[in-house]
Image (cartoon, rainbow, N blue to C red; front, side, top):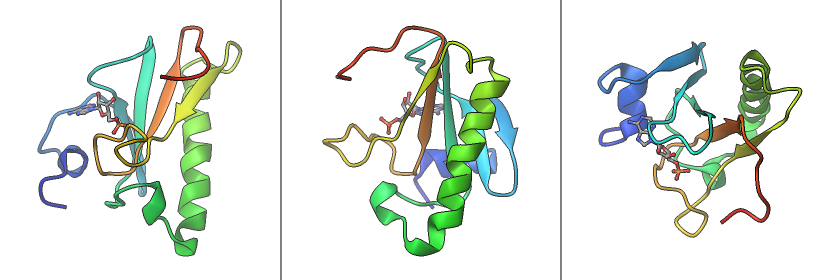
Length: 114
Ligand code: AMP
């Protein structure tokens, strides 16, 4: 998608610290980490956000979560715990309109989130 920074990262036009890539997903370090571990997991395909998912994306959505739990385990977060965040829309705090799941860990999380 022209003008999408995460599509540019997928295509290698913008550099990122990639941690994982397969035929459907890419994980890379967040440029402005909010925790000792802060990774973004995105579908390679441009899906703007959660509310754009359709029933046809059910398998992809499930694998998004399972891929994220695998990355969290690889990062050694299983014992202490971690948090996934998916912001949706402006009031939900979404700044980049390419679906992404935040994997946050390495510190005590607070509730409620800001
Ligand atoms: P959100 O507010 O949920 O849309 O999150 C967008 C995230 O993308 C933020 O945590 C940003 O720090 C992160 N981000 C923006 N640009 C880049 C980039 N070029 N490389 C890595 N992370 C980025």
